[in-house]
Length: 118
Length: 110
Image 1 (cartoon, chains in turn red, brown):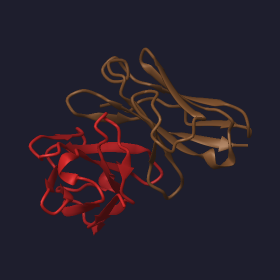
Image 2: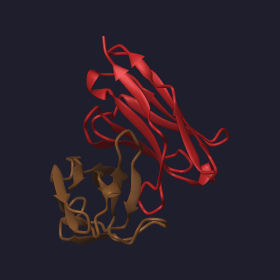
Image 3: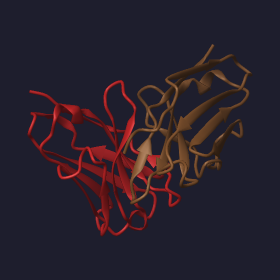
Image 4: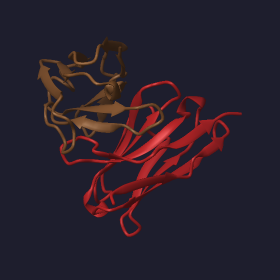
């Protein structure tokens, strides 16, 4: 069964850090590019970051560049998002998603809530 | 990285057809035939409905179709059904390995 399961969300103070994880199963993780996408409360989807299948290249939205780092451990079939210098506007549900090879996102995790509040 | 422009809401009666537009620029929608569309029900993860502008993943009803003209992509849903009521988002590849989503459109089935 193809599955993506996020973990690591929670409440953090402004300026703090948090690391999200996304455990993949049911497909060849080491051959797949992976994304993080977020959705602020009551708002639309926002693409956050992408990593190539081998983790050598990483790309970010301007809104998180320099603060967030996407990484992966192919030996553990796990994707990560290290979030530093968090701001209130980073409050959102964070989804990990598999890249479909044609620049689409055919598979998504269930989402993980991150709340940045004092 | 400006969001693509979608209407905030559209509505239709069961059996009718509706079209949702998604307007970008020559740097994203206009440059690539790489627009995808996602359906999201409340509290759920998004679901891919259309990719590469007009292709349907396996299992998606042929009532859903996509097209593009210039900087604007469109999603058409024919034979509207109650379960189609959801939020719909377009997404385009935007060069240099970045992606941009639309603001989302709430579809109401009357």
